[in-house]
Image (cartoon, rainbow, N blue to C red; front, top):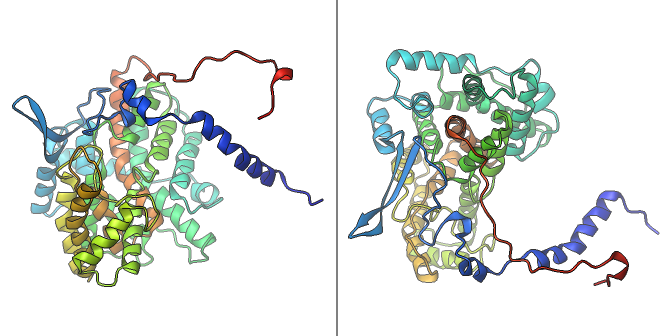
Length: 458
């Protein structure tokens, strides 16, 4: 009789018992309505359950008219400033703004020139990893999953910090600034290690340049020749700014609040936030958009024909195309109805990059899907709020045009969002007095215990 190894037996056991677990863990959807439970902590209009207060950012997706809340054009505010105004000012002044907006989110105010210069110096000085960290940690057991690699690196950095568990605000701020500074290095070096050891490609590790911004250094470290254009750096800088923060209720920022409220350390909190972000319903959505659009190109003859593209999109909704999930990725948002302000701001810059990179046909296809998809979703689905493109719809195309590999899409989101996580962690530390613990209602019927010897096999 053939001997099976323990891992094979484990897989067989899990396969055999999964239906049993499914049968005894499923909850009928009608029960959520019966007990007034808001699934996903949101109502049918996308309004979230109020779970906290914040001064960091604000999302506006509806307004009051005649005593009722109605959808409106989406707005996003960082510390009270409209994101469109912040980005517009940076564009007019021909400046990259990642560091400036990071300062705003962390400290609550825009820096003066001297404060900004000092802050940039602090971040540049912090772009360093412990001796042999790249060799001993990042290059060991390289993985295609860059988010897992990033999480492992973050948790390992705790071992090099003698004050890892000190909750003093100044110490946490030090830790957050260090992580903001090194996240690009951790992500890029993790990818290069995977690309070399798993794909047999050339290995190169470029040091960041202290005189450059986060966006410029990202491109410099990622590319073999370290080169990039001014427009490439500007568009990536914009993408980082737009992904930095999105209200305390998004999944990963809420995770930051929850884990911080337990008294955990900064490294564990950020690893938990990374685990939350990596899901395809959160930070991994832009990869799905790119993969979906590639499938569309393979299965549609005329990419300029409304009817042919619409037919493919209907197949998506009917679970007959791509991943059979019934979704048009990049369309719709948990909060926004009429428009995602980040997508509106981003779209014009993406068009400029498409012009420079000779990808006008790709941009035209995305524009076509952007126009057709909301109409088709409204026809096919019972929806309780509007559907519009979200920021992920264009960010994946942008990263592709920048030559950024798919494996790096979500890590780039994390490189930006750690700024928001840091602000939320410190806000929770300053204001928390209770561990976050929501309630769940049990719908399991009570049962009488049966002795082991008297139980019948299923």
